[in-house]
Length: 197
Image (cartoon, rainbow, N blue to C red; front, side, top):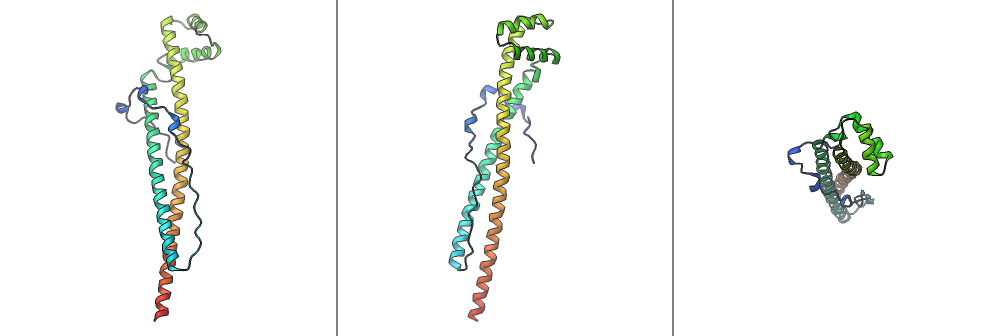
């Protein structure tokens, strides 16, 4: 189990405006492919065909794992850019004192009308100006959008990690099946050689 992706390279993180937050790019068509059951074959030619099928399945799993890794990396980069922007704009409180921001967020939830919200903030939060409150409202709306996007990205990230684990298990099963078939083929060839003698 790998930890959730963290901010690792703030120098490479651009403003969130550069982040493609198109969550529709995340494909749910990446569901693990069911393993095809291989019947035991006694003839050598059928064994050869089975080996080819196993190679195709193996390649398919390898490609799928590579694709999943690329998607995971893309999601991690998006999360890092979001985290960098949040950190750069004052963290989870937008640069306000924790108590002031907590009180503001309660008012924000209770008061849908912006003008009323500004008036209440000016009355209840010492030292704030209309301009600062307006800036904080704009920042907070953007922050909530970023957090919603991050939540969806993390959900997609978890799904991909689970899928990667399932595909890896299937790949291992295919590998073991190929090894078993190879052993059976070698035994069959050894029996044929004995009969010829």
